[in-house]
Image 1 (cartoon, helix red, strand yellow):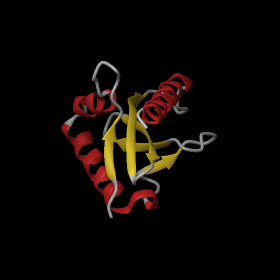
Image 2: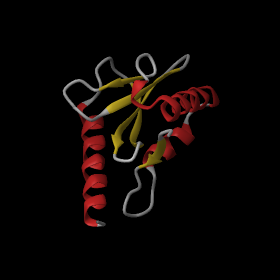
Image 3: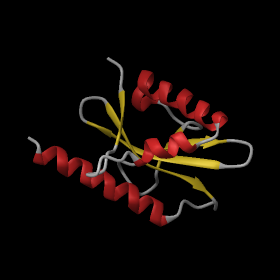
Image 4: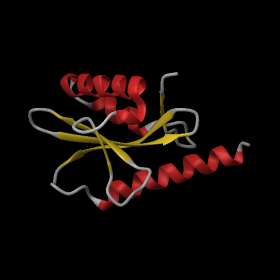
Length: 120
């Protein structure tokens, strides 16, 4: 069974990670599609340079996209039933991942999990 990729959806119906991906250049979007295909086929076995776990955050991973002039990251986590939930994307401007970007992803992950529990 292959893995599925889902986008975190806000209560208002927005999908911030999908919106970020749609804003990427065609070359960066193509790299995202390639990595997403790897994730769907190989799941948790996909490693660097395509994806990487975030140090200090057990469940959070990042999709790593680099084009000629930018470095992009898309945070996600694995969820029950062989699903990857894409939470947040941003263009990296510094060597170190900004804490505020991680905080956004963590908040969305907690909210996603809580909504799933509430719907049981």
